Each structure stands twice: as C-alpha cells, then as structure tokens.
Image 1: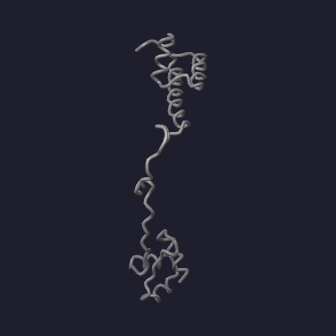
Image 2: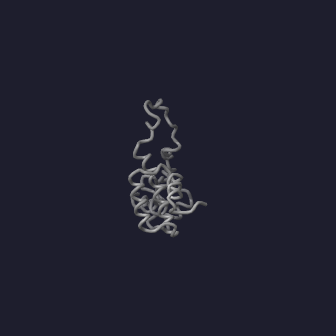
Length: 140
C-alpha cells in the first residue's frame, strides 16, 4: 500500500499523508503497481487527495486588536528615524532628477546633497524655494 500511496502522491502532487484510499477496494489498490494503474484508480475515485485545510488568514485579514492610545508627543507612533527617511529620500530623488536633466551641475548637486544630509531642507518645496532664491534654477 505504501508504493501506491507514494505513486498517487506524485501524480496528485500532494504529500503521502494527504492520500485517501478506498477501504472497500483494497484488493484493486494492491494490484495496481504502475503509474498507469494508479491514474485509472484515481479517475474511478478509488484514490483521492484529501482536501487542504484552510491556512491561517493573512496579516491584513486578521482583525486588528485595539491596544489603546499611545501617550506622548504627536510623533510617538512615528519614530524620528522614519521621519528622517520620509524627508530625505524624496529630496535625494529630486536632486538626482535635477542632475540627470542637466538643471544643476555635478558640483552643485554634490553641495546640495550634503546640505540635504545635514538636514537643511524640510521638504521638496523648501529645496525648490532655496534653488529659485539662489538662482540655481529658474522659476516655473
């Protein structure tokens, strides 16, 4: 019977423990020794794959638990590192776009990049305002 289970598991693409053999037709199953014989028994319904158990719901589907309110500053839920990343990444992308479109030179790009790293600009709008005021790029 283990040979038949192994062959059926390969055909049905499930594990050996997921194979169901009809207890009423044990003699037919024992006589089947080739994949062709096993396929015939599967088509007859003598051998079947057990149904899959439903998996655990994904993280998004699970009901969110209310853990109460956070106390502290307005940024208690949003760490300073995440705030920094949220400011710096768009600024760096903007600088790269300006450099690639030849609106600023490489030396200016490097200088501005270091200023962004130093935290000089609050947002993309602030950076654009600085560039316009210093005559680095023209107003739109």
